[in-house]
Image (tube, rainbow, N blue to C red; front, top):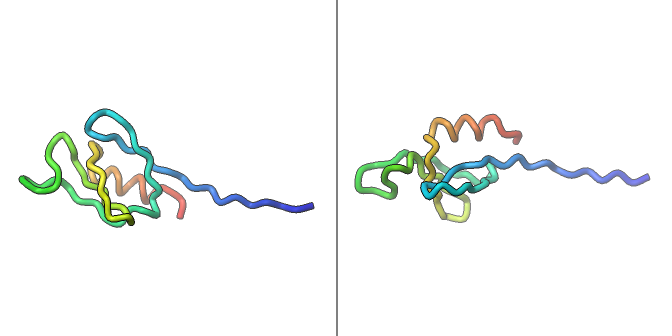
Length: 75
């Protein structure tokens, strides 16, 4: 009998400033940056999530909240 093993990927659900959701693979997050006046993001976004493809997401969750979610996700 053959056994098939599947790796489970736990995605993190974040919220865009337009109210939509986006799912992120924790392994693809490279950096988290809070908003800075006149810089990349402004309110109501509370964090810029940088990804391995060089893009970023402006989300309403704080960087601290996102960091906790990423740390809770399995490796």
